[in-house]
Length: 434
Image (cartoon, rainbow, N blue to C red; front, side, top):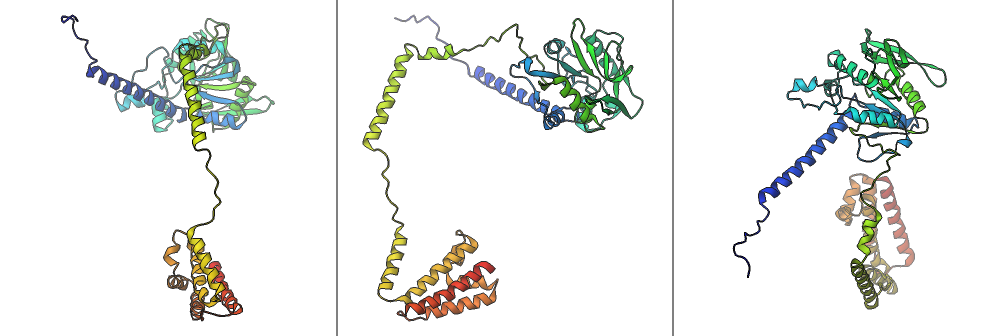
């Protein structure tokens, strides 16, 4: 006997299922919103999608990356890392008003741990932020939308360990800085409201002293070096078209990357795997093969034998479809039989009416297509159709049809051919001229 005092098993409550469904939909919606925001950032004036298109067009292996799979750092020649975050490690606070959104200084949410990991595993170009969200949203590069200088100083000092390093702003609207390419030719980078920095402790590449745009700098607490670009307008969609910025970007990035790929990295986490720590895969082929071992093996064998039996019986009972020669439709056979009888009985004149009807229908299909041929396929309708375009041909056609219908039932083959040729000439003129 069962214990009547035992409490019954409680079913899953409907509220829990509804909550789980709502939670899953919310997470899916959040992932979609974040992906759309990331895409808007990449294609906006401050994004680097234009750089990827330009380098690819110049036969430089380039790809953008937002995370999601493991990347082999050996194949990467240079990582272009746009920060879009003036305070890494500080969680991005969503704007509550439109004004806060316009003057928001961070577009992404990064952390220093991942940044330093990427710098250690592959040559990296750090692209400092310059514009607030308002520049992306309005498309206006106004000085009021520049990020705070103190935040940029903090990024440079934390990255390089140099406490004297500072960001400076050019006093000119457009600043031209020289750059020598791989062939020795001198190019000039043109930057609007240039955001430069003091290259103390760094090796300048574009600019010098307090007006350095691009330099190779040490990494704090490491023997590694990192390229630092203080003004993203050299590479982003907004500034790439100015001056000779595009040529400079192609020469510098391709020169550093060599035979490797230029990776424009928008991801928050470090997706590079270390050669010292091989990838530990969660699943192997052994996980799949165990479904073909006993007792599953008997099920697979039984299913295979059943499938073979079904196929064998189906082939034995029916077999392939027998090929039957197409003898034509019943209507065509009837027409051919009627024409043969009329010819045998010498009624060439009576056959002319049927011939004229068939040729007019064929010409109508040729002119307006099979779908609309029924509307003008009848003789009187076809004559009216031709009259709207060529009155002279309509009169000739009407006269020829009248002569055909007035023929006696029995005429000579020579006379019939004469009337056929007359009709064919008129129909050919109509087909070519209307």
